[in-house]
Image (spheres, helix red, strand yellow):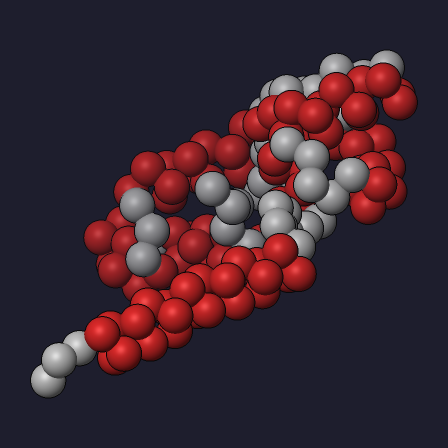
Length: 144
């Protein structure tokens, strides 16, 4: 969840300092009682209202993958996710999961089209020709 803005944090604490009740502050700003308690405690103990850093270690594979993935996708546009992962590992030596590869491709807004437009148009033509032949045969052989 994204942290509340610094301005909102300051307005909440200003309302606490003005003596408004916690229920009034909750109604006014649309926050929880726990948020007010946490902000008052943080200001008392640390002297500031800055949001805490996001926990966990930063991603290590994302930056190199985003930098070189576009070229890989252009080389092999019809490859599966696993084939993209194998090609990436062969090229860079960094192993990534299919999930990581899928997320990286999604961030690039790359669409994965499996069939070319020529193949689909040929298929449509053959199907429509087959239907037309079928209709002609019925029309010619009918005894109405």
